[in-house]
Length: 146
Image (cartoon, rainbow, N blue to C red; front, side, top):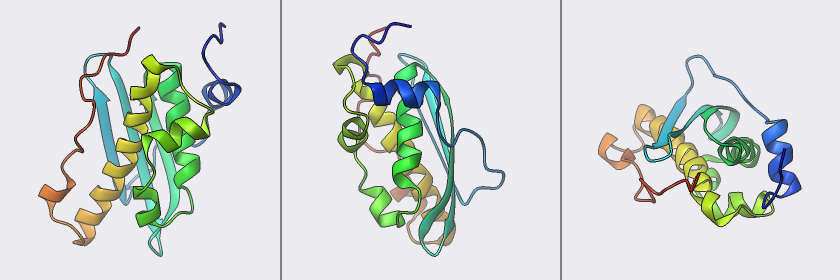
């Protein structure tokens, strides 16, 4: 497999992704997708004492999207929900030692799916109103470059 433009960390998280799967009856669920390239990311969380206790993902997409999903779950596990909401796409890309420019949108999807899952939980417990959980403004529709 060609690794041109991909860091060792990206390849590691693509070949051996962490936290793959589904949590039945999660406390929070987030789904984001990019209709242009077809990438779809789902994040499931359980919350204990206002922290991400367990987190799983299911991603349909390119290797970068899978690596980003894996890294986001690793970064969020154990953090408070407020801390996890501060994880940005740049944080994810930096943790993966960078992504090729045409794949940076994948890191948007990872952070956005995590944030959507947390907002979903916050709506359930009444911390925020459903309209406050609307998807974040981002690069929706950005091309994958494949």
